[in-house]
Amino acid sequence: MAKRAATPVRFDTTVAERLSSFVAANPGMSLSSAANRLVDEALRTSEHPGIVFRLGPTGRRAGLISGPDVWEAVRAIKSARAAERGLAEDDLLTLIAGNTGIPVRLIRAAVRYWASYPAEIDAEIAAADAAEEHAENAWQRERRLLAG
Image 1 (cartoon, rainbow, N blue to C red):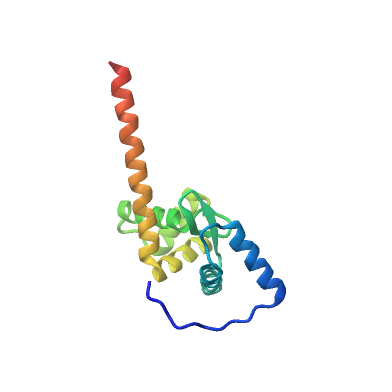
Image 2 (tube, rainbow, N blue to C red):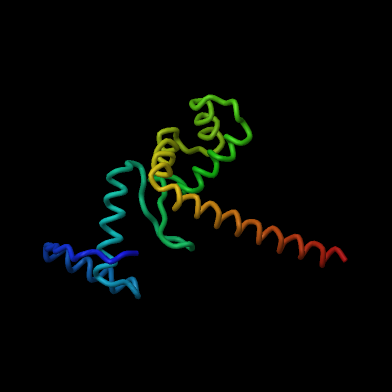
């Protein structure tokens, strides 16, 4: 990432204390990197209502406010579109909502977020696909070994 000119920011005392606590709880982060990440996430959630950021085994990622990660919703959309090529948009969204339990308004939020950050979401989908393939291959090897 290219280094930019310093942007002076003055935080209220309580905000600065909370930021320092956040950095202390996240080893390896500097005050600058923490502030950058938190401001970026706040801007993204402001631009994309219904999106939150959460920590998990693969790091911080965008999620739906009361549902799965954005990548999971987008993967469901891509899968449904591949299976039902001629389905109208509203019918596709209704199908996905029915199959996943995710409200249509949140599925649309996931689509809008993906449209703004496709590389980020597509990379998460690719990583999940690779992990699933690895797990499936390991399971197949176990079955072959135990089957004799």
